[in-house]
Amino acid sequence: MGKIELLQYVEDLAERKEFPEFKAGDTITVHYKIKEGNKERIQNFQGVVIQRRGSGSTETFTVRKITNGVGVERIFPISSPFIEQIDINKRGAVRRARIFYLRNLTGKKARIKEKRH
Image 1 (cartoon, one colour):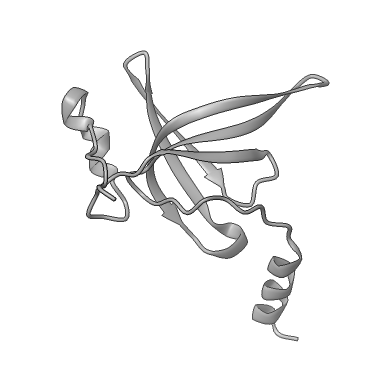
Image 2 (tube, rainbow, N blue to C red):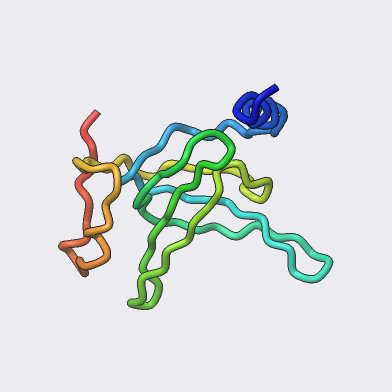
């Protein structure tokens, strides 16, 4: 058994939740489980998906939101056991897979057009 087959085998074993299909430009809400001491609570992180990278169990996605005038980005592993669910609030119409140009835009310029169905 080679290294590649072994990786494939481990990825198949890893339990993967089914999330809705989303891509860069979409506005999503990530329901993330947080442990504080011995208590658990769910925190919502709503923002625009800036990128998805990787594949299989190592795939991650970056979500950006503006909080009190400060840009906050958070990277989530898609196979994280702490992600409770992902809701898609809005489908964005963007032309690229990684929309880092959003970091330099503020106010109305930072809005993303909604994709027409």
